[in-house]
Image (cartoon, rainbow, N blue to C red; front, side, top):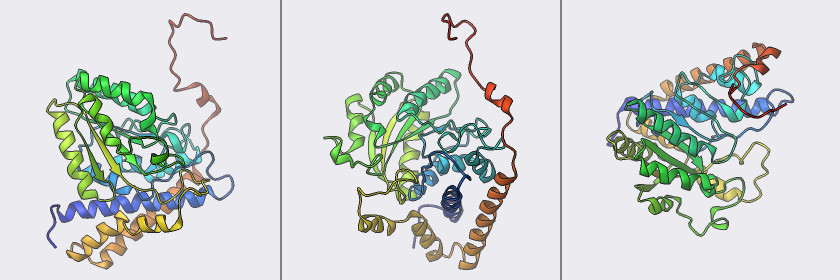
Amino acid sequence: MQTKFSKETYMYWYELMQLIRQFELKAEEMYKMAGKIRGFFHAYIGQEAIAAGCMTATIPEDPFITAYRDHGLGLAKGISPNAGMAELYGKATGCAKGKGGSMHFFSKEHHFFGGHGIVGAQIGTSAGLAFAEKYKGTNNVVLCFFGDGAARQGMLHETFNMAMLWKLPVVFICENNNYAMGTSIERTSNVVDIYKLADAYEMPADKVDGMVPELVHENVARAVKRAREGGGPTLLEMKTYRYKGHSISDPQKYRSKDEVDEYKNQDPLHKVLDTILTNNYATQEEIDAIDSKIATLVDESVKFAEESPWPDDSEVYKDIYIDANYPFDVD
């Protein structure tokens, strides 16, 4: 079977998607053990092809910013499983010093700017990041990820308008997994093709099968090239599906088991593995070795998180923005 992409690309995609998948499954296991992981937890399982395709279509310096379903993209950008698991545990060795938790992964070193808990907030912030890149004269392009629910926020429209007006280097990626928190897009909007929202701003846009890393790569690469050349933003609607609920506590009564099973038959991890084996890019033994290596990394991340210290009490006063010239009394 002839492929457009190299053996190295497929092997990278498989290993990255398997890392995301196994990290999420292990973290879910730890969450369900009382007291291990607290707060909200939103799994990326099923959406890994988007992270994989975006990584091969960009350079390491391109900033990524997303909402609270952020573990997968954070790992893709280079946050280690140790730092990620420690953050879920709230430990000082976490990628946000244990202060962010599941919804607020962050790494300036790896150009990963969150992890945002306010629905749609990252859309406006992404334009600010893109403006900064343009102002500084870099060649970097911002990738902004948001869900179909966030597409209903007013922030999106204000940001789209300014981003087009200023031709900012940003690619807006809607990871449309069909249900927002638990309500189908058909019940929330007359416009069910989210990419068409870009028409109001004459922004280039397209719909992409987000379960296929090849298509994700091709469309993101085209949008990133346009942005690097000064052509401004693009909206890409990635049609995808989360195999878990909105959060780990979601009973998922709004969708049927048959529907979930149908999408599991499109599992991007299995598709990439099939391509690898069909083209003899790796033997089953080599795949097993990769799986074993990742399992070890994930198990070690749990051990690392368990043994890491809690943040010192003094940390509550650190990493806080203060404007010394703020004119109002806040006592």
